Length: 308
Image (cartoon, rainbow, N blue to C red):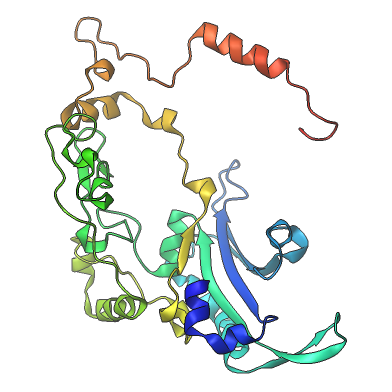
């Protein structure tokens, strides 16, 4: 927000101007019955309130609901057009608003700061495809993804070391990350909002064949670029914490262990050639350890209505 305040001092001059964020999430209400139906919700949240209030239900504005037989995918911009038009109006033209604390009217403006979503919804809002080897929106065409032979999946394992300092000891470590590999490269260049907009505009001329060959990550021009200040925002899209954490247990299977043997040096987790079994994962608890945890949970005491 400090970056935005430095670029738009006229907006900061009025402390009562509103800052907004947009959240979206999709779910299948009839998934258990097998009916094909997808419902997407779009909620706008004001950030002028304290953190303890802005995330509460009374202050979250239920803006759009999309009940559809299929996922809207890149057609979500069609339903966001009225929202964008109103946001443009709130930025370009002052709206007379009543201040109940001071008992007088004032001219209010509003700005849209960023979006918050999970990774699949990020593709719908930003226009960048989140599938394939160019799925990382930060790395873009400089992605260092690898293909796992046994799992037949794209992985970005060991792509983070290039963001470390040039003299960091992890860069020369050949055993804790990908085996026999030293990281000498640097991070991908940071693009400004104007540069991102130019690359997205140029992507219009890219045909579908280039997209299938994973030579271009853009799938559309996001409707948020219609906002006059969007290209000056330092942070335009965010990923919510709930979907960052993955269930590691479901990913730790026999194919993953075979892929790990090809790219890592972790003999203690490889398949035992004599028994044909895989050793337990480091996070797996023994029967005795589970009993200790259960006894500890049983002994916990909380105030009334604190834990449900």
